Image (cartoon, rainbow, N blue to C red; front, side, top):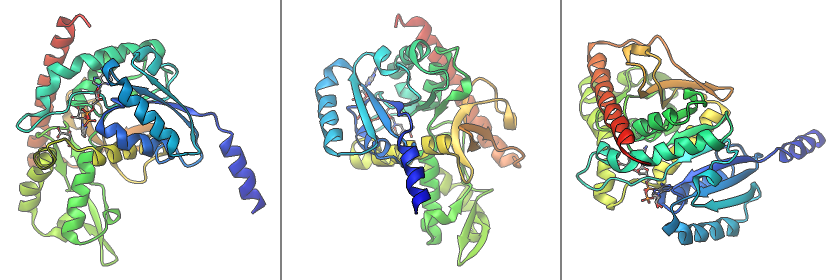
Length: 345
Ligand SMILES: NC(=O)c1ccc[n+]([C@@H]2O[C@H](COP(=O)([O-])OP(=O)(O)OC[C@H]3O[C@@H](n4cnc5c(N)ncnc54)[C@H](O)[C@@H]3O)[C@@H](O)[C@H]2O)c1
Ligand SMILES: O=C(O)C[C@H](O)C(=O)O
């Protein structure tokens, strides 16, 4: 008992980590800030200082969020820095959730947001380059997330490209929950579901290597579901279109589930992942994916680093799916870089 008390006392003396959340007045941030401030992401004994970035007209709303964070009386929250200045927001930060961007409306594809949002990630990449710790871990949530992460990294050339990631964890969580519901088991009983490629309707949700524990026995998902045709068609489409289905129902894009996914992604990166998780990361050419795109791969995280899971079989069906989503990412990259060069931001 005495030993535990000493250990806790040491942990509470840890230096706070500085964490920036952009789009701090928006709907995803409203759920995410609470998760970060109460210890879900960086650990139950790790103090945090939150930097909240939004645009000048939203500073009144941000003040309200600051009041509510204070009123939560969270022991790990050691400071809040609300600002509309990217140089202040990114000063000495250890981790960044880049959420602030326009969400799509019904009938739009996420890439339709490219022209409106890509400039935000250019400016924030430049601010990261000037101000952040070289070890900063960046998670891009704002859409189109993969291409925004690539742009952000290009404008922060002194920071390793591996430190910029895009969120496909929401797709992974959706796919995992869907399989768990179908098998009538807990989400915790389903592992190694993979999302390949872009966070878009070309993504490839892949359960060919996934496992489930059913009635106490670990089996492959395809063995448990016994309907490969369904897993290759309806299931894939359902996950690809889930974001649009939420928008059609809520008239707003997903927020609670997006915040939970952002928390899961950064937690696994920071603290290590037990199983494979999917993250949009800079392609090194693995699985025949072209380099210089941010592509979602299965990864394992440890020591605050991700490593792409190697050696998985890519059959003809999977090859076709990977190639479609890679092609879209190349097209997005070309369009985004042209927008950045044209803009005077
Ligand atoms: N990758 C994913 O899985 C995923 C999931 C859900 C939503 N999203 C995306 O996340 C983004 C945010 O969604 P939301 O629902 O929170 O939107 P929202 O409209 O509720 O909030 C966005 C916030 O960003 C702010 N903002 C705009 N420009 C900014 C800038 N330059 N700097 C800082 N803040 C800025 C806005 O003022 C607003 O407060 C959207 O692009 C949405 O499509 C991604
Ligand atoms: O679908 C959207 O535009 C929002 C988000 O990317 C989602 O997947 O829910």
